Image 1: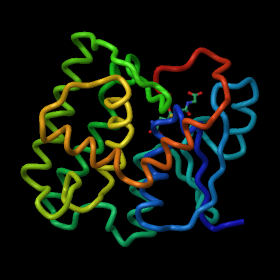
Image 2 (image 1 turned 45 degrees about the vertical axis):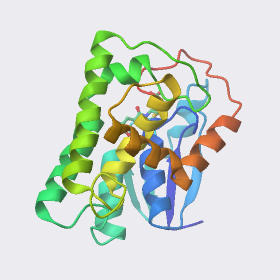
Image 3 (image 1 turned 120 degrees about the horizontal axis):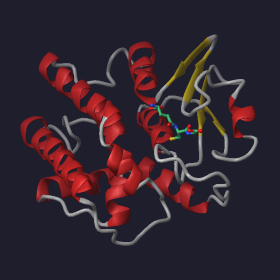
Image 4 (image 1 turned 90 degrees about the horizontal axis):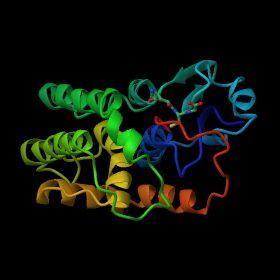
Amino acid sequence: MKDLRLVIGNKNYSSWSMCPWLLLKMFDLEFEEIQIALYQDNTAEKLGPYSPSLKVPVLLHREITVWDSLSICEYISDELLGGSGWPSHPKRKATARSVAAEIHSEFPTLKEEWPMNCKASFELRPSDKLFEEIARIDAIWSCCRRRYGANGNYLFGRFSIADCMSAWIAVCFEAYGAELSSDANTYMQTLLDNPFVQKWINLGRREQEPLSIAYASNA
Ligand SMILES: N[C@@H](CCC(=O)N[C@@H](CS)C(=O)NCC(=O)O)C(=O)O
C-alpha cells in the first residue's frame, strides 16, 4: 500500500475529484488511486471506511485523512510540495487562493445546468443566471492571465492550485459550448491540452457505470 492514496469518484462526472488528482499528477507525486462509483446503491457503504463526509475526493496520507477538494490541495501543497502549489509572491498567492476559493464555493448554476460529463458534446443554451456565472469566470480567467500570467500559460504563469480548480470548468465549457473572450478561450484550451487533463477526460469517456440515483447537482 502506498503512503499516499486518493479516493475519487467516476472520472466522467466527478469534477471535485479531478482537482487534487491533477495537482498530484502535475507535481509528479506517486499515489494510489482508489475509485468508487458514485450514486450506486452501495456507494455510501464503500465510501464509509474512507470518507467522513461520504463524498469524494478524500486524501489518505499515512494516518491522516483529508477531505474536500480545496483542503486536500492545500494539504498537498503544505506537506508534500513545500508550498509550491501556490505562486510564491504574496500578492499572487493571495489572489490565487481567492480564485480557488471562489470557484470552490460559488457557481451553483454551472454545476446544475452544465454538470461535468466528459462524454457530452452539444451546445446547451445557458440560462441568464448561468450566463452571469460564465461571465464572472471569464473575467477571473482573463484578468489573471493578463495581470499575472506572463511567465507561462496558466493563470499565474506556472501551474498552481487555481488551475486545478479551473480544470473541470474547462471541461464543462468545452462540452456545452461556452462563448468566451479570446483570453479566456486561450486559457481554456491550455487546460484542455494539458496531458493529464486529456488523460482524465479519456479515461472518463471510457467509463461505463450508469448513474443509478438521480445525478446530484454537485457531482
Ligand atoms: N465540497 C466538496 C464537494 C464534494 C462532492 O460533492 N463530491 C461529489 C462528487 S464530485 C460526491 O462525492 N457526491 C456524492 C454524493 O453527494 O453522494 C469538495 O470540494 O470536495
